[in-house]
Length: 221
Ligand code: URA
Image 1 (tube, rainbow, N blue to C red):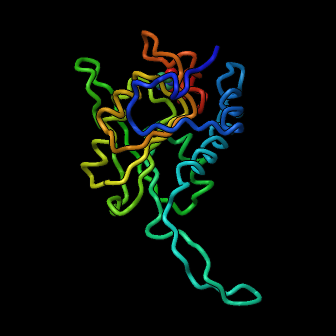
Image 2: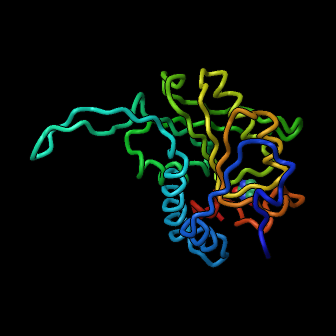
Image 3: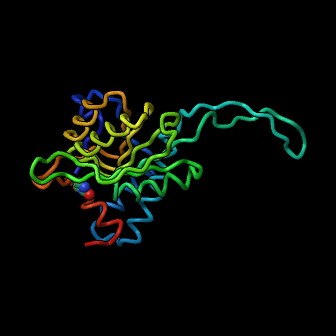
C-alpha cells in the first residue's frame, strides 16, 4: 500500500515536514513489521530519532568562537544560545527522546504525562517536569504516534502556558486527521513526521501504522 505524503494531503495547511531520507524510510518499514522484536524495535526507534533530530535542528543558529587547533587560532562555528530542550510525552515519547539525546547530549529534558478522562475524553495532566528556563530554549516535543492529535495539542498548550515560545513537534507516524487537529490548534508549531498514514481506526489506532508504540518499545504486550 502506498502511504500518503504531504502532496496527497493538501488540506493540511500547517508547517509540516515529511522526512523522506532513505534511511529514515527504511528503518520505519522495519519498525512497522509485526515480527520485529522489542529489542529491534527499540534500537530502530533510537536510530530513526537520531536522524530525525538531524532534520529538526537543521536551522539552529550558529555563532563563531575563537579556538586553538594544534596549528593555529581560528574563528570556528558553534551553536549559539542555550541548548535545546526535548519534551517527551509519556510514555512512548521516551523511545524517541533517547535517540535525539544521542545526537544532542547536552539538551535539557522535560516530561509531560496526560491521560484521557474516560467520561469527558478531555486530556488530563498527571505529570509535568520541565527545565526552569524553558522559555529560552527551542523545545522539541516528541511522541511517536500523532493519532487523534488531542493529547499533543493539549501538551503544546501546557508548554506554552509554562513559557515555551519556540516549539517543534516530532512523531514517527501521523494521519491527516491528527495533523489537522494539531496544526489548527497550534499553527505556529512546525511538525516533523516520517509518514502520514491512511487513517485512524475505530480504536484510534493509526492504519497501517505500527501498532501500539509504547507496548512495542517496552514489551508490555
Ligand atoms: N498510539 C499508538 O501507540 N499507536 C497508534 O496507532 C495510535 C496511538
